Length: 102
Image (cartoon, rainbow, N blue to C red; front, top):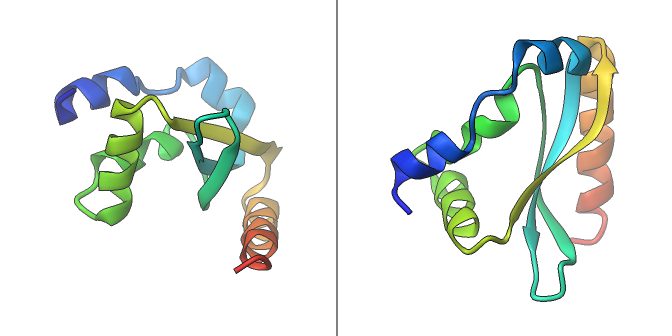
């Protein structure tokens, strides 16, 4: 699967859905052989922000593209409908929680 095919498969979030999501916090996850999720990134955004990670030129983008090709990638919306300040707090809290095990 080419980068262009991956980008096409990650079509933008519709304006209707985006309006309902407002600000949100999301997790990029890797699926193991049993379907268990392992979070490797937590972020916050609006609109199609969570889909932008496959378009970069960094290690995270490479990992996302590899996982998409292997059908081992998922994006979980952890919380939505937030104002910007609350989204920032929720994001920081989630990052703190997943960092506890490291």
